[in-house]
Length: 200
Image 1: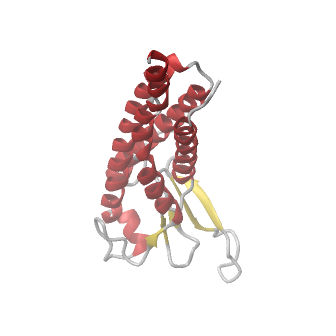
Image 2 (image 1 turned 135 degrees about the vertical axis):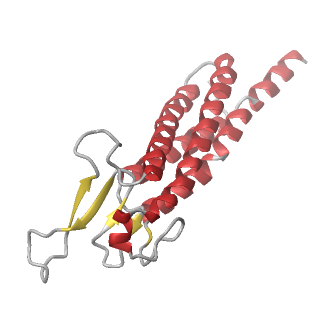
């Protein structure tokens, strides 16, 4: 069974994107404080460990905004919506990555159907993850965020805090994932050429 290089490329990119987006979603380094001990993510955050002396404490303790699996206690409605949108997009990307790997091992008559369906799923994932990324900075005007990052912080203004590596990884993952639906539509190109040569 010959495997198209485009199918392999699409599968690899899909897996990498799903891993990158999931890692960025889980880690609470979307926004970081200059002291590098406080950081904020979509559903969790890290603060200075106050159980030790303030002069010797160089560690932080990470907590979720709520003790349950609910997103209702996230301190901002924008972060709440962003968490739901970006998290759903991560789930879609993971499902799409599994399907893209499965396409590699299927007969070519199934490639087109699964690849197109998977491309639509990846398109939806890109759109809702982009919406989640754009909504996240709208939560910078909450009292919770201003307590840590200064009174000058507001929507799309992080005050004296800065964008962390998780947010940058999320942006990079979504930017690369734009190519996944395009590649999914090109996966059938080699098979169509083979069929044409067989017909001739």
